Length: 164
Image 1: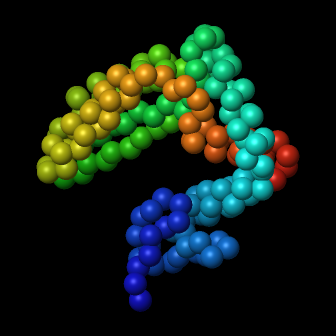
Image 2: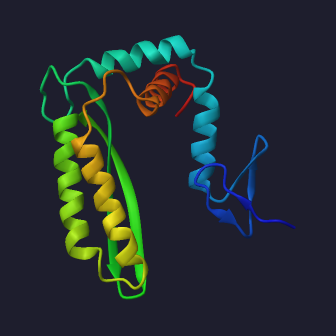
């Protein structure tokens, strides 16, 4: 029997796969993610785009600033300790300037704590810092990202009582 990747997180499922409407998932958290995604598909694309555009042109929820586009901002980190290395990414809804502050914090944390794992810390540390630098130097988005549209779709599904 071939091992399959989880439909939500992509990790290989060795044992105990759960089936959600034909999608194999590895955990209860991933079940919730797939159910949320399937339910959010019931929200019309036009409504999701409209909500995403409202968010994109609104005030930043972090600093309250107006005029900079608001979108989902990603920041990446790597933390290592001898033979253990963990890399992760987090997303926050904010303007580009607030996103850059978050990316700078995560880069500094990675710079201090990322190198200490062998061999992956030495590999992932510059990768994660490079992703942050690339995002910091990029121009702010001119329209809502696909991630923001998806989040708007989930917000609408929750408001309509489709999601809990």
